[in-house]
Amino acid sequence: MAKPSAPALGFVMRDNRSSLEEETGPGVSAETAIRDEEEREQALMAMADEIRARAQTPRSEFLDGDRVFSAARARLQAMRGR
Image (cartoon, rainbow, N blue to C red; front, side, top):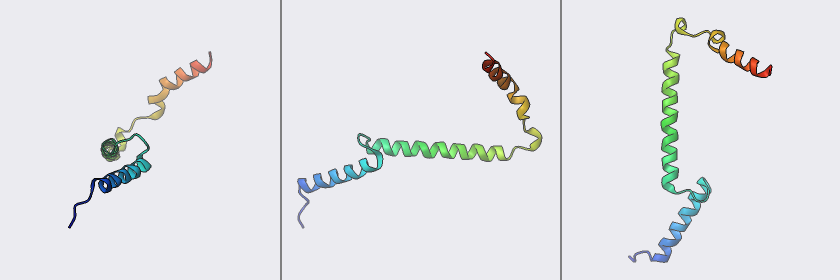
């Protein structure tokens, strides 16, 4: 069985690059796309863990939103009054 020639291999590489650019945009390497996807996955897992942890918080430990944000509201109102 004959080995693939260099032009055929080059065509496959160009075809794969073209497909990757369609998915990621021109100028984005496969390594960058893979790293970005891994980072997104890690961020989503961290957010899911935080949501699960917060869902376990007893109601007695909830903070009163009016009290927590009162200083920010007062500051915004003062800025609007200028």
